[in-house]
Every structure is written in structure tokens, then in C-alpha cells.
Amino acid sequence: MPNWHNILNELQQMGSPFDVLRRKYIKELHNYTGRNVICYYSGWLQKKGIEEVAVNDSDKNGLMTVINGLDVKKGLDLVLHTPGGETAATESIVDYIYKKFGNDIRCFVPQMAMSAGTMMACACKEIWMGRQSSLGPIDPQYRGLPAHAIIEEFKRAVSDVQKDPRLIPVWQPIIAKYTPALLGECEKAIRWSNDMVKDWLLRNMLASDPNATTTIQTILLELGDHSVNLAHNRHLSAEKCKSIGLIVKELESDQKLQDAVLSVHHIYFHTLNATPCFKIIENHNGIAFIQQVQSVMIPQNMNMGNFQPANIPFQFPPNMVPGGNGENDSPEIPNQIPPAK
Image 1 (cartoon, rainbow, N blue to C red):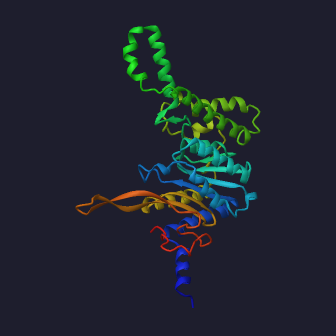
Image 2: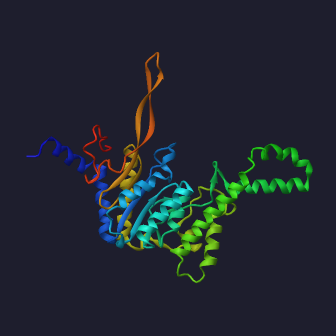
Image 3: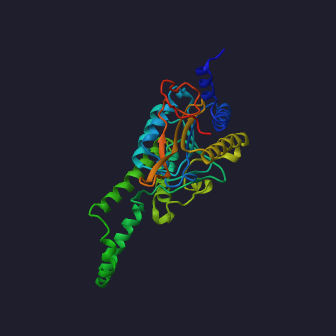
């Protein structure tokens, strides 16, 4: 007869209904493709105002957790849904994935992989998109503003003042907001972003393209130039991405594959909508690295004893994964946070 501790472990292994269904549909996708599957999902559409929804260095820990133990010879199918994030973190993550899987990486974008997410997609050998899917511009943002736009505004100011010195009082308060090193930092950010994508395209997606140099120039112009896209959050369809030279496969061309990918996508949206989770990195074996928001009580008025809830990010360490399969659980740690319900 199982004791209390055995029953607790069994409950933790089963997880919540969201955990059970995610495992089911990710496994079905894996069974259909015969490849490793890693889902990299951010809840930026559900959880507003949390900086950690973006790609950041802590995501490397998640990928280390879910890649550990996989047969890397089977390649990787990366199901990606992200608003983008830090350039440095993106570079580090892609470099790590290359070291583990080589070039045998496919990217699936059921809905959106924006900014740095688009850069990750460009590092793969092919991108699978549906009619509802979107990539986005990769032009870097500096302090919330497009780096291209800052440079363009400064050049316009110089040109206007040279043509008509009477415009100096008009431009002076605008240019005064720029720090001395700002233009240089913007130029470096643009060059860094473009060079990364160029190198990844040459290494993988366009490695066998005899016109790779010309194709890459078109891709960088369409994805990386703010004056072309006009807005950083512009949604670029599968047709558009294919027209500029990216290797894009249509999910609609394989109905079983489309059904499997969209089933995975839908259960992740249900999880992100109905639980405190705001980021999930998970493989087809049920190993997951989950970050979630915790509600804590913060004193509003110590004298009156009033309290108000505040949401703060919480990251489950690799050995404390809610709803995991038990292989990475830590029963020795008391007060372990239970799976999200």
C-alpha cells in the first residue's frame, strides 16, 4: 500500500489538467514528426506589464533543463511564441541550441514570433507558418524607441539646420534629449542585430543558396530597416516572409501536422490564460521550466493594517517544476509550491 509520501509524489506527477493536456498534445506532435519538440511560450498577451515575458538570460536555464537527456541526433522542432527581448540573450540562446543540435532545427510559429523571436526563427533551417502566423521586424529598440528612428531624426535635424539656421530653436529642445553616446549606441545595436541574423542565415537556412548574399540583403532591408516597416510591432505574414527570401513552409500543406501544432498552441494559451504562468519552456517528455506570477500581500498602511495584493514574478528552479513528470522534483524541499490549477 502506498504511504502518504508516495501518494503525494503521484499527485505531483499527474499535475493539473493543463499539465496533463500539454504533455498529451506535445507528445502527439513528437510522435508524428519523430523529432525532439521544445515549446517556448511567453504569456505577454495575457500578463501585461511583466518584463520577464521577454526573451532574457534566465531562459537559458529553461532550455538547459528541457534539452538535458534528449537524443540530439533527432534534431529539434522549436514551437515558438514570444514578443522578443534582449539581443544578448537571443545570441546566447541560439549559440547554445546550435551547439546541441547543429543545424537540424526547424521553427514552428503558430501565431507570433516577434523581434528577437523572428531572429531565432531566422537561425533555423526552415520556418513553418500558417495563414494566421506572423513574424516581425528585427530593428533594435533603444530605451523604448527604434534605434533607426533616433538616427533618422538626428540626421533630419542636421539637414534642416544646415538648410535654414532659423530652425535651430525648433530642433534644439528635441536634440537636447539625446545623450552624447546615444547615436553611437544605436548604430552599434543595428549593426549587431543585422550581423547576427546575417551569420545565422548563411550558416543554416541559406547555406546552399548560390545567391545568399543578395537574398540576405533583401531580408535585412525588409526586416531590419525601420523606415521600411514603419512600426516595430508590424505583423509580417507567411506570404510576406516567403517573398523576401526566407524559407517558409505552409502548415496547411500537411493537415495532420497543422492539427498537431495548433493543438499544442491552444493548450498553451489555455494554460497562460487560466493560471499564473507567464512563461513555459517544455519538451515532449513532460520536462518543463515554468515561471509564474505570485500574489503576495504588501502593506499599504502599516498603522491601519490594510493590505493590497501585488503580482511579482516567480521562477521555478529547474529541480522544482510544477506538473513535471517527477524526475526533477525535490521532495526534500518543504513548502514546495504546488502545480498551478
